[in-house]
Amino acid sequence: MVAPTTTCISAKDLTLHFGTTCALRSLSLDIRKNEIFTIIGPANSGKSSFLQALNRLNDLQVGYREEGTIELDGVNIRSIDIEQLRARVGIVFALPFPLPMSIYDNITYGPRMHGLRNRARLDDIVERSLSESFLWDEVKDRLHAPAMNLSGGQQQRLCIARILAVEPEVILFDEPTSGLDPISTARVEETMRILRSRYTIVLVTNNVAQAARVGDRTAFFLMGELIELDGTSVIFTTPSDRRTDDYVTGKFG
Amino acid sequence: MSTDERRLATKVRKVREFLIERTIFVSGITSIVIVALIFIFLLKEGLSIFLTESVFDFLGGQFWYPISDPAVFGILPLIAGSVLVTVGAAILSVPIGIASALYIAEIAPPRTKEVLKAGIELLAAIPSVIIGFIGMVTLGPLIKDLFDIPTGLTALTGSLTLAFMAMPTIVSIAEDAITAVPRQYREAAIAMGATKWQTTWKIVAVAARPGMVAAVMLGMGRVIGETMAVMMVTGNAALIPHSFLQPVRTLTATIAAEMGETVQGGDHYAALFAIGIVLFIITFLINAVTDLYLHRSVRK
Picture: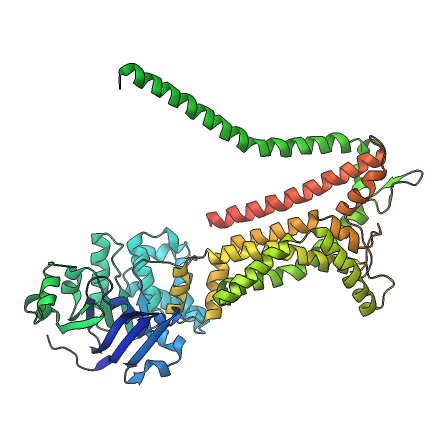
């Protein structure tokens, strides 16, 4: 496979602090356009903190400090309007959390918040986003039913559709299948593989096998440091660092 | 443990379970029984007024002359007084109460939040007679001068005073409802690029709406039932008011002011109890409507 080489996100010398704890230490890495970039590592390794730095969700935490720079398409994310940044870099959380409204309103919430009012275009967005997340066929007859009535896997795909509706460039997945059954997990993974052709995907996962299944490149984080970054197959077959080898073969973590 | 011992232990446990269950049942049902008894008592004492005064004349009568001869018992002025003062209080306290609940729950930094919450709770702890007193000696003269009217004790004064009293209930219950909205809703909205205000208004306020409705209704319940403060500041003229700047008399104030002068079992006495029935029905309706609304939105 020929890897696409345009850089999408570039982190330089990134250090993250929450109060007195240092979550990530001088990390530098590039994420390429249209790849599935997976991050693995045990708990407290800084994976989610890194992910949430990419769309500045960490800023909501009290006592958060950040050093270094993150660039999106060559522009420092600190110089991008924060609401615009979060629209361009969407995130899917571990637990699906539909907003307390209908399926339709869940999808149109984002576009409406960004100022879109045209009913026909909203209808289009709903159909397109739900189709892209493979939920359309299951819900097209009950778009105005409460989103809470969907099953867990459907809710997670709704959350993906909700992000797609604001037309992001990058989608961050923060352990998106940790609360799902194997069949729903397979669906979400399939969705990610297909979305890859149009979006850049960053996936944080506790499930090492999942990284092996969907990742193009994989980074291994440990205790707030990047230990190794390489093609997924390399990481899982011939990693250069022993700790990576121990982790992916299940000796710890 | 022998079989006999085991059997005895089982028996003791059964008896204990039975006793505990009954005790809890009795405690639970007591409140309902008491409410029913109060209502029956009100009916028993109050219904006799309808032997001399028709229901229509009582509810729709424009004159309340309980001690003239013949006495006239029309409570329309009193209902109008209560409604006017309550509506005024709602107009003042609901927007401010909800806004301060949103501020405390969503915007205020932790320290400010603590101070404000303590302040609001303290406000609820002020006895109503003190609020009434303050309303009478400071608010009354102020309104008199401001609008250049003969007396400062008006419906508006009552509304302002009661708004002040409804505020703690509205703020603290609405604030609880807003704080109880799952953090994930906010994160989801913010992660889609919604601004803080869009998140607060379109997500948090919507999710907390049943709680906020309950807060408003409980606040209004307090306003309708409030007696002492309102009696001190509204001027107590049993006339149908045509503006907020006229003195009014509420249902509650009438009962409190006149009960001491009545003859037990007399017409006046019965009329005051009948006013109690009307009040009871009003608060019951408010509760019922709130309940209906809350259950409907839960099912939705």
